[in-house]
Image 1: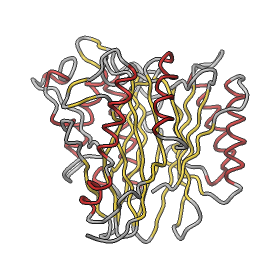
Image 2: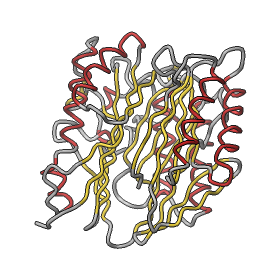
Image 3: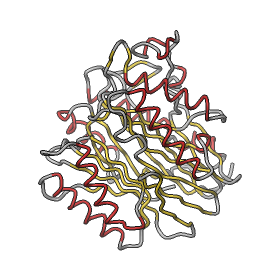
Image 4: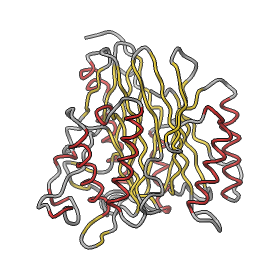
Length: 388
């Protein structure tokens, strides 16, 4: 698991290339402290006088040069940060420990393997990027195929997926009664049905991006027997994979009569007798299965935070893990997706008041429902203490 995150924003507004160079130098300085990079998420606004694919290639080559043979998982997506910035970078690191970190590449996609005394982990970003932008179904299948190929190369499978990020171009768009998000859900179900044989699902985020196609980002773990992987529910929310047909939009794929609900857990807990990590999925203003606070960004943000707090209640997490963690949970990352730039200030004001000092990145993205204005994901870590 990751130990710390750093959010890099440019110090001076400039062109996309200039702002990236400022962030790159900042990250380069962090490397000199001995931290090992595991993942890099780069969120960019529409580039000036370039196509997004051109700027993605430019930044990608620059990142490879910066990290040389220590290149982390890199994912570059069209998600504008808060203005006036054109780029925001979220970098995840581990410190010096006894684990062995290997930096590898599959078909031009860099990924990271970490092997420790508790098992093997993969961090990867970018499967599907740039493929089949004209067809959401083909794009989703290609992304899942690439993710599976990386797992296969490491003798792992979809059974080992713990955390998945799904970026879906024009997520709410409907063509011929087929919604892009619903198409993605159908393809995800096809893959999980075929290649995942364990019960439960990964934690996940599914949001739009301002380019066509599908891009995935994932964390997989093949732990030893000391680690438990436990789904975490919110008793005030319906499990997403049991949603009723009324909240799923468009028509089902392939002529079936029932639309496939999104398959992910509200959160996933990894724990042993030494430490724990909670991956909180992309969380929105939903109670039961209904959107709360329609057209009210403040209310939606507050309800979303309450849902995250419910998923990370120390007492509940301690009972699930069989440990006494009391108030030891440490929030190490927030990623906040906001539908409209005009709402950034409201969301930031609320979140900074409730989560001061937490590494947080704010980016613009469509959420998976027309009436949702904000989605927040989180990651917590903790040192475990006395057993119950």
